[in-house]
Image (cartoon, helix red, strand yellow):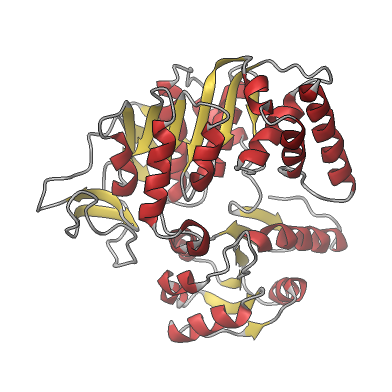
Length: 446
């Protein structure tokens, strides 16, 4: 009876939330767990094939949702928290909303994005069979602390499982370490692709002995072909590797010298997301026929280089930590069109109150001849404006009004506008963009 009441309460809460314009991706589950604390355990009993979770600082929402799309395309049924609510409440919401009105649930797979710091709490309710870890970077220092704290939390979570199969980014020394002594497969990019320009490295010291890591080549932050001269720690043998990478038009690369990938995605980092998905499907013994078609059909979550036509292309991207911002900046600067850029920084609870991470972002790389105007906005608009001053990048406009910022950019002679935001600015910015689109007559997205 508790289970049934919990499912009904979650469903009613979700409906009520949507009526008042909320996503209702977490609160229904929080309510349900108050009624039935073991709801997740009860509903997950009828997951037939297994549970796969995705953790990591960047890319976990895209990786998780690509995995879910691939499984659906293969004819499987799934439970998935595809809105990105990745703590216990969000997991409970996904299960409760997938259940029928009698409290029953049957699915082949549970496909779950899980917050790194919450993995222990989630694994107390449900044990994964497979676990993808995309990467580890500094993120929300006031919540996570430094990376070694996150590493400890993830190790504790992995130890709670019953021999979970790990799918790890072998190019990231901070992530690859989880595979030592465990059942693990590694994915990575096995050739130099990007210019070897100095940038902030998160994990620049060996996880085993503390000496500075050396690189044959690196991709971004600490990701690359690394080795330690002192203790011999090095990049592991890669089970799923990407080569023959071509970013001149569409994104092209080859997996294990045989599987050709050709997809119109933006951002070098998406190679890792795609590799993670392909690797996981292979480890799960799920067929990968039609993988390119699945990638082409996939619609990215809000703010993942999301293009909205407002008379000129306006591209919205979530960037919430130094590594994510540096990758966004690299993607923006690879676009040689004349461009306006808007940067919005908030410091609400879900962003992290500590914005000192802004000083670890290589904002100086935005100082380019193709930059037309730069606008700063958000709650911490003066902090980000000061950061640009020290990066010697001229800020043209400062405003608290996102609609005004976008409208001003639409009136310039720039060919494209990029809007880079952190977490709590994401949904309001998309809403503003869609409002402007409606006012302009509802032009279709590209």
